[in-house]
Amino acid sequence: MKISASIYSDKLRPLAEVIQDLDAHQVDLFHVDCNDDPSVFTDIAEIRKWSTTPIDLHLITEKPEAYFELLRENPVDYLTFQFEKLKAPLRLPKDIQGKKGIAITTDTPVDIFQGFSEFDFILIMATTPGQSGGKFDQHNFQKIRKFRKMYPTKSIHVDGGVNGEVSFILRNMGVSSCVSGSYLFNAPSIGQALMNLTKREIESSFQIKDFMVPADECPVCYSHLHSAKEIVQVVDQGKLGFALVLKDDGKLIGIVSSADIRKGVLKKWDEPQQINISDIMNTSPLTILETATVVELLKLIKTCSFPVMYMPVVNSIGHAVGIINFAHLIKGEI
Image (cartoon, rainbow, N blue to C red; front, side, top):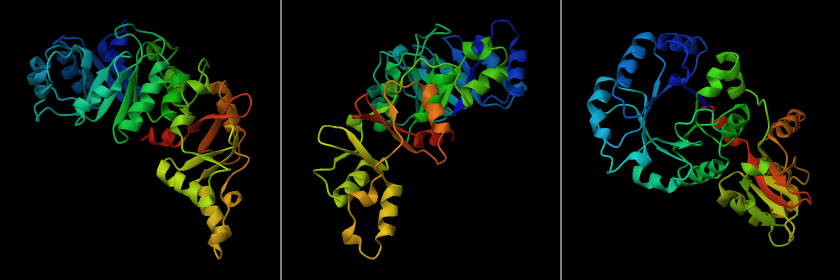
């Protein structure tokens, strides 16, 4: 996941010094907020003289057409428009460069992206816009899951309330970029903050149930209803690479992944008709409680001597309530 440093969050130092410090720490992007202020483009022109780091411009205006010529003169790498500010359909000239995105606040549904399907990404504002240092609103985890399901090929960017713990969760959910301002510049050093955002958590306030894929969005089979062939079909149709296998009361008895199916086929290569559920199901998968924290999740993963791609989530009586899918953690780093 790329870190986009909000350059105006540092109120104490000259802009040139801020840019030099961020470049020294190899930050991925420079996030530039333009709240209907054309003078921002003077800064962009200066930044281009000092650095080759990509510029991530967030344009907050009712009249984006007033900035088209400035954008031609000062092209940026990422260009985001604030949806709630738009008073008319956005007609963007084809010669405006950079990847395009639409930003929405927590109260705006991701469904609005239907009107911007030609854009490359959505930017989810996870705190109150304009309030630096706000707390991440966990409602946005659900919005991220929904957008990922609706637009699997589009990128997701997040702005607001991203600390080390939230960053880990967002990477796990496949978020491509997060904007960091007060967290980055209020840390003892930019280097320490970047390490927290990209490698480890420093606190834990969210529980697994806050960001897991819930059971009603997972491929699910029931051992008393489905044959081995039918379970394989559920895995294939679910397009997530796995299926949870439950008892009729919802208690988890195992998981079937694409890897488990391959092992079962190889085991009975010469008699494929004899493959049964026990041949393709992992009956003792690594699980985690829905009330566990991110710190507890990381500690559990570190105890494993094998790669963990899927982790079923259960409640206190062993019923399946969701899953953590670590495939997005890899995609989010690209």
